[in-house]
Amino acid sequence: MEISHIFQNNQKWIKEKVKTDKDYFKRLSLSHNPEILYIGCSDSRVSAEELMGVQPGEVFVHRNIANMVPNTDLSAMSVINFAVSHLKVKHIVVCGHYYCNGVKSAMESADLGILNPWLRNIRDVYRLHKTELNAITDEETKYKRLVELNVQEQCVNIIKTPDVQKAVKERSITVHGWVFDIQSGKLIDLKIDFDTILESIMEIYRII
Ligand code: CO
Image 1: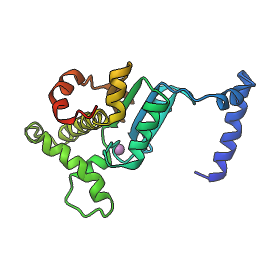
Image 2: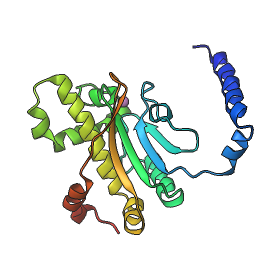
Image 3: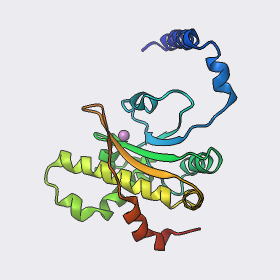
Image 4: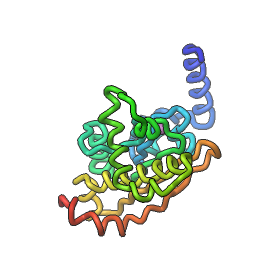
């Protein structure tokens, strides 16, 4: 990949956009009202807009290694605060993906430096769901399930934030857990039962 190609691609893209709508970029600059906050992995194979088929302006995006939502991470917390309390998004999506190297690395016995505290959050997910995961004998199936459970736990972390707890009381906002399957290109809705999860955890995590 030549970096200069990117600028040629950009010129082509501008031409395509203004061919069908000459005011496309002018309109884009006038407002910012995305209805979805998407939190995904930084993995280059898992695009955000492209896999969802959405256009610029439609989705507010946050990506980091293994789509994590640690409640002490200033970046993730700022994104959630801005998206929920200012942009007033109606949906928050955590999208993980099978064959996530972040999830796999987290479970290996290796000193990964600055990545240790970041990925340790995934070991905590494993500990919470140890009985279920240890019962899976096939390694690939086990890692796929850990990817799904990590998405679920990050959704729970979203519900722990005061911004989301406040929004849930005041308006319609939904948290979704998805997984992207790199092998098939399919986006899978994990259909996480948030009502049941909320009922069981809110006595501990209720802030508002
Ligand atoms: Co990943």
